[in-house]
Length: 384
Ligand SMILES: *[C@@H]1O[C@H](CO)[C@@H](O)[C@H](O)[C@H]1NC(C)=O
Ligand SMILES: *[C@@H]1O[C@H](CO)[C@@H](O)[C@H](O)[C@H]1NC(C)=O
Ligand SMILES: *[C@@H]1O[C@H](CO)[C@@H](O)[C@H](O)[C@H]1NC(C)=O
Ligand SMILES: *[C@@H]1O[C@H](CO)[C@@H](O)[C@H](O)[C@H]1NC(C)=O
Ligand SMILES: *[C@@H]1O[C@H](CO)[C@@H](O)[C@H](O)[C@H]1NC(C)=O
Ligand SMILES: *[C@@H]1O[C@H](CO)[C@@H](O)[C@H](O)[C@H]1NC(C)=O
Ligand SMILES: *[C@@H]1O[C@H](CO)[C@@H](O)[C@H](O)[C@H]1NC(C)=O
Ligand SMILES: *[C@@H]1O[C@H](CO)[C@@H](O)[C@H](O)[C@H]1NC(C)=O
Ligand SMILES: *[C@@H]1O[C@H](CO)[C@@H](O)[C@H](O)[C@H]1NC(C)=O
Ligand SMILES: *[C@@H]1O[C@H](CO)[C@@H](O)[C@H](O)[C@H]1NC(C)=O
Ligand SMILES: CC(=O)N[C@H]1CO[C@H](CO)[C@@H](O)[C@@H]1O
View 1 (tube, helix red, strand yellow):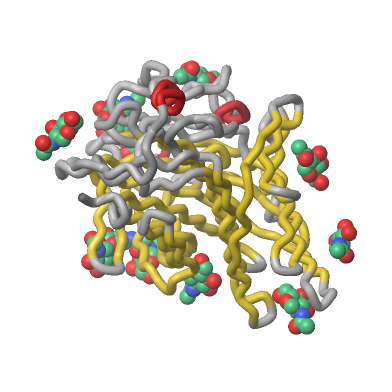
View 2 (tube, helix red, strand yellow):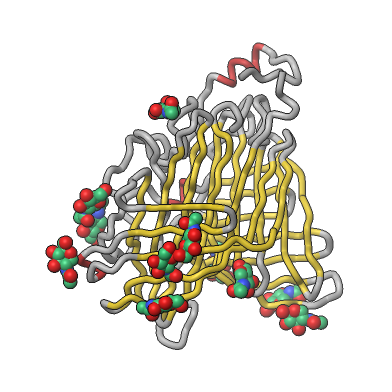
């Protein structure tokens, strides 16, 4: 597969191409794989299997880089479904430079109105005690402990403030092949990804052009993916999902990535965590734990998809009284659809279903809802 260059690459730009990813100090992307991810292992107050998510969330592609793209996706499920896709560069184009930043915004059914918009401008960032990514006046900022991730956004007369508190100081790094954070086994340097906020609780407000000030409340996940290569040459596409289940006195979060490599290999990475709220509360947790964080482990994660149904299971172990976890899900309506500059397309669907999970030594039914993301990249402008 060859990519046609849209513009001649100057000698200076060519030398930039060889300066590989600028991993931020403290991030563990590309480091030798952490072998022991969670395997029904029990309850830990904070994650200790990967580097701090705070550094991992910083841009890993330099804006001056000759090629590359990076995405930060916030999904909120709550007062309204909200998708905020922050990006630099274009994941579907071979020679895209990351200089252009975008925020794709979908906020559904704000009193009957769907807010769909895109903000464009250079993406800049500031490292420090408070780390900030900005596109114009729009910011994502987080503290060094990665407890709070706060978004402010002004678009089409709407002002959004969304402050997200992590239920657990946790991060999920798929580790395909030999390296932390890798989503693909092919490609040099490949495509990387992590989930800096597997489980966040968001609150804030949305001020509308007609002067309403609506209080927001919901559950949020943030994913971060990036590469110095366009996806199409080695990845046909990927899907990812996050589902939240609330049952009796716990809520479980299940996240998966499925990466479809061009040669037919499929990689699967899955995360399962639980938070136990203080009785009567939905946002203060007396304990949180990770049960599974696995990559390409057929013994521990079974995912089957067919048409609109998606089923996933994870086995039990002595810590769960040998009771397994199952998620039976159905994709529903389209929440949002984004077209990348090179013609690739990312679509977000609602997910609904049921879960059967261990709690207090018995199997308990619950309902789950979430978001399913499908990304198909095309070489429309780059095909010879
Ligand atoms: C994580 O910490 C727990 C105790 O808090 C310990 O039992 C476990 O071995 C640690 N895991 C790793 C991979 O360091
Ligand atoms: C708009 O929606 C919010 C949240 O659902 C609600 O609190 C508010 O009353 C609604 N406003 C109108 C004018 O319907
Ligand atoms: C985020 O917002 C929360 C709630 O308002 C605040 O306590 C926290 O200091 C903020 N953190 C950052 C990094 O903006
Ligand atoms: C909306 O209400 C919040 C308090 O809930 C307040 O902090 C904020 O300033 C208000 N925003 C606007 C634009 O009125
Ligand atoms: C696809 O490529 C990967 C990595 O190079 C390799 O491990 C795998 O065996 C290949 N699969 C097929 C079906 O050729
Ligand atoms: C972890 O998972 C593997 C399967 O990949 C299994 O063989 C092993 O027994 C598990 N270990 C524990 C401690 O559950
Ligand atoms: C998922 O499970 C449901 C309920 O058992 C079943 O009807 C459906 O065929 C399954 N779908 C897949 C893709 O396995
Ligand atoms: C759970 O499974 C293990 C291994 O198969 C077995 O030793 C143990 O007795 C089982 N525990 C229960 C409560 O069934
Ligand atoms: C999902 O479907 C399987 C059969 O395909 C069934 O065994 C399991 O109980 C179902 N789980 C839920 C939560 O409905
Ligand atoms: C869970 O729900 C399914 C279908 O609604 C039912 O068949 C099953 O018996 C329930 N299981 C438990 C443990 O409640
Ligand atoms: C029937 C049902 O539970 N529908 C839910 C599916 O998920 C969406 C968003 O994730 C919810 O808004 C629906 O209520």
